[in-house]
Picture 1 (tube, helix red, strand yellow):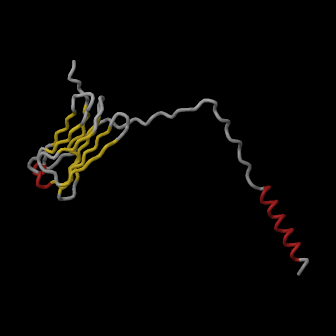
Picture 2 (picture 1 turned 45 degrees about the vertical axis):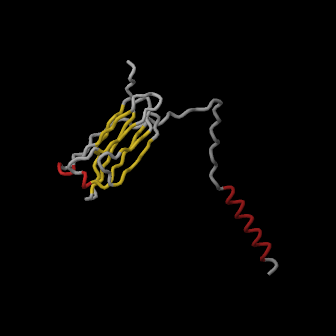
Length: 153
């Protein structure tokens, strides 16, 4: 049994050497650039899309306004009621800022006068409002740009 151990060790070493010799050669890595490269920033989606057609008996009104004071340009999303307000389960509003940040808030069973407040910018923001009804359907009722309008001409 003693001659088998050295022979087995010799076979294992031979297999390791052969395996190392047959591995593919990896190409050299590209040289590092002396200057850092910048990737272009992702452009936020500030293009409004068409809103959904809500059945007449489910229609509600939502107002989106922006404060005209540049030190605090908040955005208000106000649920103003309507014929379908009793069918509303949730109002969800999303504001997309020019720098790409996104804010989302929701109000369950909003009543007339329910107001969602967002921080705004002194540039043009995008506001999207979705309404979910008792039948489980969700409609986009607002999708608009909200520009900053300075009160000083």
